Length: 267
Image 1 (cartoon, one colour):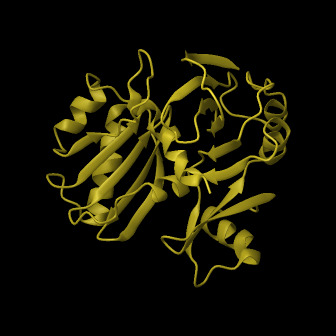
Image 2 (cartoon, one colour):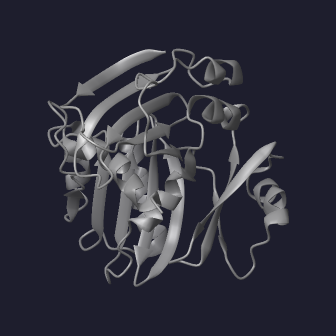
């Protein structure tokens, strides 16, 4: 596993939360205070094999804070394949059927997150070996999926619509909301800025959002002077970076907004 970047701020005094974000080929670990007001430490690492395997997950190095007693550990799974099922029709025993119908997979293990404000269940499969690895390295961790977190941090009241966009290493997560309704949630792979632009234009066409008025709220791996930002700015006017107001050294704070969003999973 290769570490891409590392942040070491002043140690947090008192109770500390552990945040873990696990993608298809990357992992991010961070610490924060219970109010999520400051960042203690953060590390971002990638697997050099292109994708996690079950043995590699079990061989993950022990947390750098392994001797620290955390108030709570919150884990977010970043795979984009999930299904949002209305509470009125959700049945736990039908989860394998939901997943097989949508993605053609027979999951070995699976999970659902309940989102009471939306009366929805977010249903998703767990990659082979992942649940065991989480139990091994972060016992007692609370697990949620990224779309659960995004929905809990959304502003669905916007009349002209909101596109929540999280940009990662190889894919983006997109959620479209308008007038209290969830219109779309899905992931898109990309290899260049044009792929991201085309994905967002496709979402606008599908939802009826106007490029001139939709609120495009972005977090993740994008810079204001990047080719991607310049490309997006030619098509979208209402681009907003979701800064998390953490001290993040030389890195823009919107890189880590998705971590701070995990605060919505604290019960």
